Amino acid sequence: MNASPDLSFQLQQIPELRPRPQPLRNTPIAGVLLTNADLDHLLGVFCLREGDRLDIHASTATRTIAESWLGLETVLNTFCGARWHEPPTKDFAPLDAESGPGLQYRAIELPGKPPPFAKGAEAGAHSLAYQFLDPRTGGRLLVAPDVAEVTQGLRDALTDSSAVLFDGTFWSSDELINIKPKAGRASDMGHVTIRDCSLDLLKKTASSVKVYIHINNTNPILAPNSAERSAVEAAGIQVGADGLEFDL
Image (cartoon, rainbow, N blue to C red):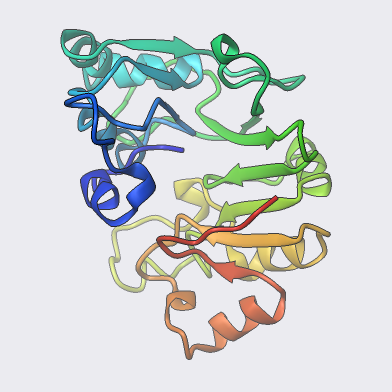
């Protein structure tokens, strides 16, 4: 889910993501699902160019920006190649149709703007959340790292998801401005805040696993002894960390 610039570090730290003993120059990563065209979500894809052909799931708007402004498709096709997939937005569909029955997914379109570097980008679905379904267990996982507004479609997905990984970028609207005066507020950057929105929202959901992800380094929930961290944990929500695992 997205590929950040520190992807190489993640590969080293997480055994399941490391290359297999054989064949040479391989990766267990078969594909990437992009939630938008932010640099923090795209740049790691370039690091995967030396492996096998990649399956990339993204909206048309994200794919266009990735190619027109960054040349991602051109670079990948020079090396490993890529198959692009427009995610389904209504019913669940197989994540890997060629492998037969297995994990299913769908995308939830959310309000969102193109990234700052993509000036003049056309309108379209610039932000997606993804919901996954395991037909064997019935478990559903919702991954929503870029939530500018809690739409009805997102609320419906929250209601029937067994686990939720949710936008925890900012605790409050102006926390980044306090450090970097020229920065925008949380809403300017396409994120609801924990304090004023998602804390109460997630507290009321019945999901057995609730985790904040996409956390900015200004967010006080990263401090284990902070009042904000205590409020999150009291609501039954975890603060995401590398290596976190759970079963559905």
